[in-house]
Image 1 (tube, rainbow over the protein chains, first blue to last red):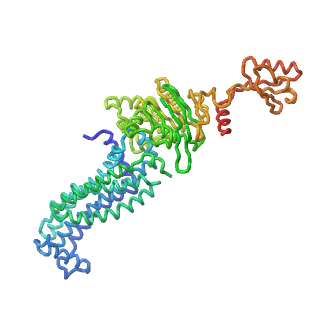
Image 2 (image 1 turned 180 degrees about the vertical axis):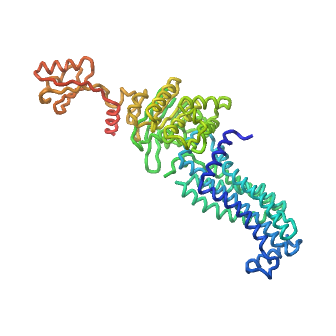
Image 3 (image 1 turned 135 degrees about the vertical axis):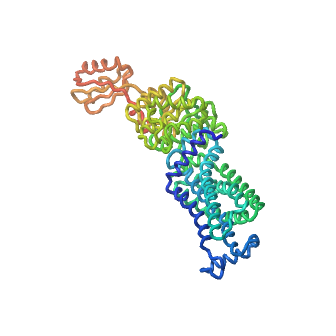
Length: 268
Length: 306
């Protein structure tokens, strides 16, 4: 059962999000992107490398043909199955970007609205403050990602059945990544964004600093952990374990560096 | 209830508050006066445990500062704060704002709604409790912020400009609220620029300009607070000075154009004696006024001496 204060806090954050010109476009564009791009690729890519209109697509098809995990499938299905599998990175990118950017505004935005000092003047502990903020940032981005993943599975199922006569669904590793790795990656990104937000002198610099940290580190993390994790269930479990460690370490670091004084006084 | 001992706070090379010591008891209202940037907000933040003093210490509502994070959290539960700007969440209703802060202040769930209801009604916000705060006027937001500062029944309340932006009726309600807090034994520290309000509300006045340059009951602040008798003569004042200098209980005599400005110890008896002495010496008296030094005079004179 949620604490009523947390429920109100989440409602407040959700309304802030709906009214934020920096964050709302991400929530509207990214789900469409993760649905449309893989579906279009599966629907439109040629079946034979010889017919590829572009040398890059031909290279991609040859890459799919050489993938040992796809060797059990007919050659024509390998590229679409590769796309179905590798699209997991888009689903990891989504919570990282949404959480990271929301977090950048989380504390700097409160400073700007002058709501931070009354909040910090309550008995709320540093840990509870960070957890509440983290949940408020994480819940919308994870829910948006989960809903997009469900929609993705349905859309890909339809497109693959129509084009190939085969139902191509993401595997169980994909499921584990979405259920477990997505919230953890989102949490790590959110904590990184919150650190930027705490130290920022204004909203602009919070967003810029968060972008500088979250986007490059997030991309490196997604392309390494995400690509490996989606290849098998044990790999997904291992990736989840690693990301849980990263998120825990980030939380400890953020809590250690959480200085009410610095947050209150470092503001232009 | 508040004991500050040599509190000092330095930011880099700038000293915001220096060596401030004072004490306030239960049920006392203190008005902290000072120009912008004088250190009032830093002082309040230190007393709430939000920022650490560079040196010195304080005890507020039984909690020692600086202390542990747990002690500081307990201090924040025992204290209320009205910040300079209301700082309410615009996208929540008044009811939701107070519900959120009530939970954060650990008001028992069974009491929370009735407390919120009664405070909102008391400050005239009951009918609009479900409207988003973003639709409120500045004065309504300020009143809501005042409710937030006191509805968890803190032992010590810090108000930063509580009546700024309020219409006269609302300002009166706030002053009454502060009066009721005092009557309930709460200790109230009000940072204000409104000297008339400070004089009306406060038992004790402090004037801060980095250091606490004056602190005490209004009547004992700074230079002696004694009435002045301003006597306008029909002739030049300078020759008449000798006629009253030396009279018992009469203080220094100054000349201001055709006026003699005399500090008197007994405002009842001294003016007639002065007039009698002047008339007796052959000087015509056109006008006599007894002027008590206002808090503004004191404030300006105290700051002028710094």
